[in-house]
View (cartoon, rainbow, N blue to C red):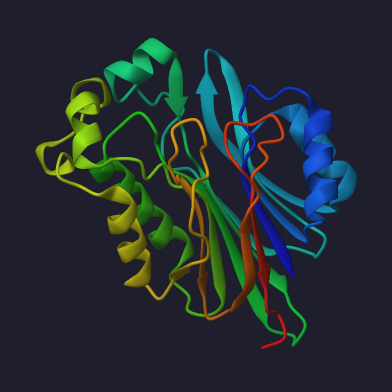
Length: 248
């Protein structure tokens, strides 16, 4: 079972690039962040089962989170973590015209041995500090991870902060004092490990800033192979491919 997680970028309006990526990866399950309606049309043409939520608004245009699957989705859930009138959390988001709703999605798919695998897709806030993103992950866990068992959590975690960057970002992103000393990638991965999840990939996923913002975490299911595809296909993020051992 092959899973693709990808922030397709809400300014990536050439939908043929989405098809090119899907042709290259040939996934069974897709988790997209920042998906535009034109991206969703390409998904619907290929996958019979789909679950959608809000991602964020940039200058009046809404993009979406999506889980698409060749297999039927069961126990689907869309959780809204912020209201329709969510205020801008920082000076940066006000200037950029961002309103980050950041719903989270989950659904179950049945795998080869007849058991179920839960898929969770999320996108944490960009224009804020690590402590806010931690609170958002806690909300996702409360909504979607109360039941034990096989699970994959995919998404754009925006785990970019580190002390030297915090010097520049603290004011425009509204960092708290505790955020300044945070090595966020390490702290995020440790947070998920404490909940029984292992990170599947290692490497740069946003080439422009040479950061790993995206990750796939697995619990009670083995990743046979994991790859960060070094082609953006028109996005500002690389796609992540994880091949899961559905036979265990």
